[in-house]
Image (cartoon, rainbow, N blue to C red; front, top):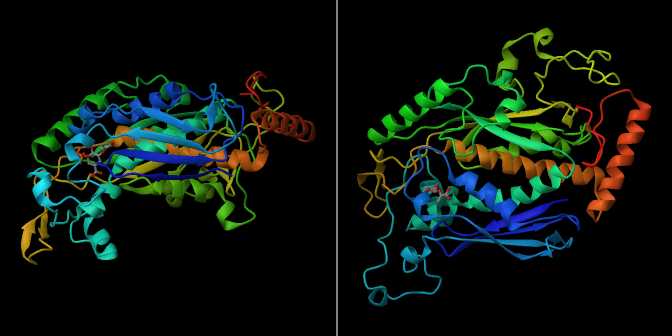
Amino acid sequence: MLRFLTAGESHGEALVAILEGMPAGLRLSRKAIDRQLRRRQGGYGRGRRMAIEADGVEILSGVRNGATLGTPVALLIRNKDWPNWQWTMAVDEVPPESAGGARRAPVTRPRPGHADLAGALKYGHQDLRNVLERASARETAARVALGACARVFLERFDIQIVSHVTAIGDVRLNDSASCAFDAVSTLDDDDQVRCVNAALRERMVAAIDAARAAGDTLGGTFEVIVRGVPPGLGSYAQWDRRLDGRIAQAFMSIPAIKAVEIGDGVEAAFQPGSLVHDPILPAADPRRPDRLTRPTNHAGGLEGGVSNGEELRITAYMKPIATLMSPLPSVDLGTGREAPATVERSDTSAVPAAAVIGEAVLAMTLADAFLEKFGGDSVLDIVRNYDSWCRELSARFSIPVPTGSREDSRPR
Ligand code: EPS
């Protein structure tokens, strides 16, 4: 339903993205996209690059007078660092004499954990810059811009996405599953690490400082929570329609993400079924006399690859950034001799930024699944489809259903 591609090198002129499948008639502004871009740039532990960039989007097509046209939306984010790299990253062939020494030397010592070596082996590149420029997490700025469009669409149906950092290195929040959506939604975007626990926040910052001082890096975990997801997104009918699989793929495509959990995730493997599965109770919630109640949400809002109407809860695990200021052993691919890995300017930790990226990729996945179920060519078509589905479902079952467009009252 939603299709997108991104392009652009980290130190090239710009990142670009094309999004197809957005319905007509959605109010979409640069401001809404820039807000998410700004959030992605934040977080303690970022390197000097973030002081250079101040990401802002240019909408090149698909939007007119503040509303989508139903045609492809083309987005562009310029790299402010580009002037410093224009000789190194020039599209045209530049003879060394005209670069006047401004062209950086080839990168030949792959960083363990980065795409450098695998990419060079795959594409036959001798200058690892040809790999690292696109493998860079800079690409995620484009995906956050795309995700911002999807988020605006989801908000039209009162679906809201928040995230929080649950670990940096070994400083961990133990009971992230008990963090309520409301508590997470009040987190300050300008907070250094966006963790709900103030004491842990300080320890996370201290851990990043210690890693930086040691020339090391830190990974961590974050949780993304979505409220207002209607039941029925995704399907068990075919493997590639399962929403949990689609969500996992979206998260695993974020650089440095090594594992994804839905609900209790890994922990569920070590518990008996009686403690893992969420009972279904008849109307017990006084606020929702018409609804069945799930007193717990170990499943994280997905059963059988289909959303069940509960909050979606996704946790992602990020490995430490691969560029170490105290580099690991490597080999100079030019000489074949042992040499320390390349040291590039980089971040010490980027978990808070990854959480914002997680929100974006989840927004895209959910918007896609939502359009699959309720799709139409315009927002009005979709509101009509959604509202009538909600009415029909509530008539047929006495289970909670979102009541569609934002003008209607929500059941939860
Ligand atoms: C990155 C290395 C750093 C990060 C970059 C990702 O960039 P640079 O090499 O220019 O210092 O800052 O992240 C971003 C540019 C960004 O926008 O998030 C890497 O190697 O992945």
